Image (cartoon, rainbow, N blue to C red; front, side):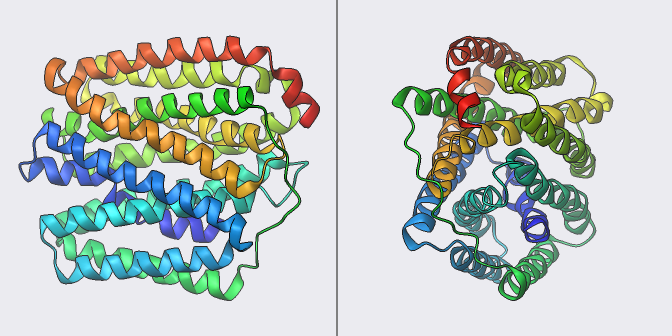
Length: 371
């Protein structure tokens, strides 16, 4: 699962984060980028929700992962044949749906490995995504600058083919019917609300960081280095977060607060430091994102919910926030500029994280008893 995740996630930067740089440099407006990112995240949310639930209904995740990878390959072939901007945007939205479904299926699969070491199991598999993101962030800009978009799609096609072959040959069925706990509406609401708000803030900052780099005359190659630095910071943080979640009730009690402080600091520094310091800031952002993406789903899975359903709810709510993030980011950046957008996002997420932690404190016993 780790290797498959790495191969697939080395492709996603071509269709996700670098898309805003490519489209903005091609003349698309800020509001247009906001609408495009919204379309991408709508597709991602639908993929997460539908494939996550479908894996529980069909009682098979391996089969869905293989179908997901095959369709992603076909979409990349279409772009390889027609490397026009309109085809690029269409393919990106299709891949958004498939990447969303893939992430939900992999979270559900990794959480089946061990209930005792749930945090570690999720973090180890998720590291594959971080490693792939690093590789894709470094390789894809070089291919685009030195050759063309067509060579980048060839790279994507090769990676996806390898992922499909490995899945078909080596991955066993990852579905299990052991987990059927029904959560209270209050617990679902707390975790869902936090996922939604985090999705809004993280998505808005991520989509408009490339625009900020472009406006400040940074190259797409430098942007790739920045993204890779953040992803590199995620790897050790994921390992540490998984271990902390498994061993420390104090960390579980304050995880919302920790996530909020680290991520809001990164967003604030985006707006305050020069372009040359962006790599260091992105490292902080990578640490914050790793804390969030491991601890929050691990908290949900520790309650014993059905894996497909739990993954679907977490990722679909995160994507719903990402949809709003594209719209809010596009509107606010048009009115106040990208720099002040980061300030607003930072203060908003810090405030909400503190409030969420206060509300969640009353339900720590529920989580502790489940673990």
